Length: 188
Picture (cartoon, rainbow, N blue to C red):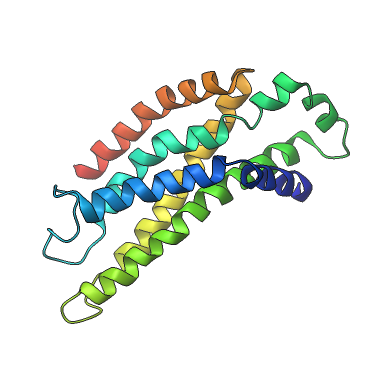
């Protein structure tokens, strides 16, 4: 399992895909939270919280996680390397778990730079450090669970097609109803 995890994780960073995905995630969050003058701007909120980030991140994940997971099994099937992988002395569960953990580690590594937002809120609070750290930690944990759910669905849709782009489209249309019902339940 660790060999599959290491191979997949290194393959993400061997191509520009990981850098593009992490960069796009941070760029969109940074623009909406700090630059654009709209309802999501933290500086316009007049109080220190990251609710806008935790509202935006699932929507951005909806388009970025399919880009990460779309090649996991689809490329193995299209190139014919799935047979080589299955002849190794590892079980199917270990293959799936290795690919899942590699994709999830990439998504979580995209979340690590957003911890600078927490430090910024710490400094912006009046007095310094006046913000709800428990709510932020709980929201980060929830975001990690949501990312793992999206990753699992992405790996499943990657097995449905031999073409990477088709699996990405399938995943986006599968996740949209799940995400919208999730957000509606939270807002009630």
